[in-house]
Image (cartoon, rainbow, N blue to C red; front, side, top):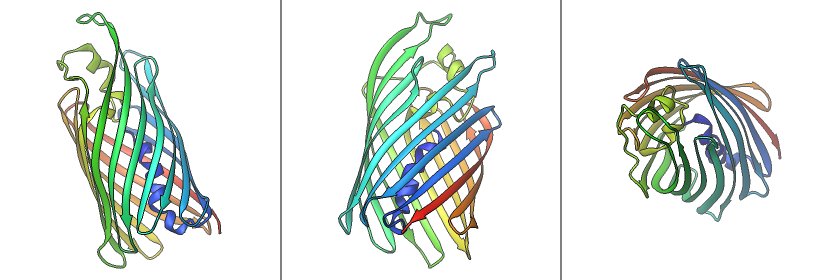
Length: 278
């Protein structure tokens, strides 16, 4: 699972203050397994209650035998708030066309007021998988799909403290479980940015946010289970957001994964946010 996939929804979560304005996010993230990711995302308010969003991102994972896997991600979405209910719908492409790629359709129905937000989330994913030839497998190309359903929300506990959560459970049209000795796992499992980390059985994340003056601290604790390897990953991330100008914020993130699939990995991210409009 790559961090940039969350950017458009993070932007939309803050669109209440982006009235007919815009937010642009530019970020990079690296981990100790030689993974590197970069993303550009934007959220534009067409009216007080309608927003468009888009993301373009890429990450690279170096493999031990000298090759690398490059993954692209792109999406576009629209959000409209009918007050108090709203709906988000989008379309996305993700993957490496030589190995694994998907075309996604995420939809969310949400309710919100000044203190809380609650969303029912659904995503349809259409995959194409190029299984490479190994010493144990002749190779094969096949298609499958997945349906994901989940809940997410955030509530203000005090004027400066909030608690958030999100969870998704996926149902696949085929059995993806593989022997851990299969060559495919060797190809895809060296980093948190690896392709295999998008094929999850479930994912759960809890977030605690604290405002300290003009600064914002956020602690994310999460876990997910892989659909292919049946392994569990536990993750913790601390983020710090602070203004560096009248219309610009910078966010630093430091986290660690404890994964049954790719071991212990530390990662660091930097995000720049630019705000404009009325």
